[in-house]
Amino acid sequence: MLGPVLLAASRSDRLRRVVAAAPVTRPVVDRFVAGDALHPAMDTVHTLTAGGLDVTLDHLGEDVTDRATARHTRDAYLRLLETLALAGLGDRAEVSVKLSAFGQALPDGGHDVALENVRAVAELATATGTTVTLDMEDHTTVDSTLAVLHELRRDHPGTGAVLQSYLFRTEDDARGLATAGSRVRLVKGAYKEPAHVAFQDRRAVDRAYVRALRVLFEGDGYPMVGSHDPRMIAIAQDLAARGRRAPGSYEFQMLYGIRTAEQRRLAAAGERMRIYVPYGADWYGYFMRRLAERPANLAFFLRSFAPSR
Ligand SMILES: Cc1cc2nc3c(=O)[nH]c(=O)nc-3n(C[C@H](O)[C@H](O)[C@H](O)COP(=O)(O)OP(=O)(O)OC[C@H]3O[C@@H](n4cnc5c(N)ncnc54)[C@H](O)[C@@H]3O)c2cc1C
Image (cartoon, rainbow, N blue to C red; front, side):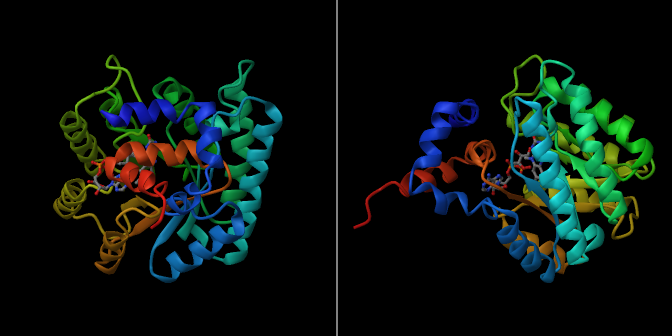
């Protein structure tokens, strides 16, 4: 019940101001966000990679409403890629982008603005030996995001896609994307979606996840299993074993701060494990989606407001 309320709150500017200004919020945010700026986030990158984990970095931001801010997003990613190149991690550190932060929703030609901005990021990623993955946002953006993906893949075939199992369309999209070299992160989906486009029942979302997982593992692409769910992880491992997939022909991905012992366990067992590391000042939408996923997180957040005794 609380999930949809929190997802609606994640798009409220009024609540954003209240939550962001509350002095007790920061320690709770720090559990999910690796700092307000690139340099503290790089400390996290070094710690994770030294522990055998790979990373994908997200410079937080979404729903940009003017061209100048979209260009700032592009420039922040260019600085990030330059910093990663200096760290010499190659494709152990890639980047994840939200096209809404690159101008996708601008009323006049937003799709083309986002494509132009993200192309510059993909070019630098290729030049520095790494990749970009296009995060997937709400269902109204899927066609535009997949069109940008196809355009970028002409010159940058390593560009990654994200599919959300809660959408009815995803099994078909997975079939279309299960081609040689195609990097596809499969997730359950984190937005509030209407019943005419998405499964509303968690079990139906899980079953759809397994169906899409099977398509990806049986295809020729590079599946990226974006889930903390132990059942999805076990099924992916089983599909990998049955398909005799070599280590390194697929990977697991989890979010920074969530199930960290399991992240280390999978890496120690020889799996490729990549951590999604968000950083930056615009953490509100990302943080609220993490609260929505798990009521216990909300309780933890609310407890931080209680006066200490
Ligand atoms: C690497 C990565 C990238 C992602 N990118 C996108 C994207 O581009 N677009 C998109 O819509 N969604 C994205 N997501 C979010 C995703 O859609 C889900 O909302 C999220 O992963 C929770 O689903 P789950 O598969 O972990 O399963 P769930 O059934 O939700 O969770 C399984 C278990 O994982 C743990 N867990 C899950 N979430 C949390 C949490 N917030 N806090 C604490 N514990 C938790 C709990 O133990 C829970 O029981 C991404 C997720 C990952 C891991």
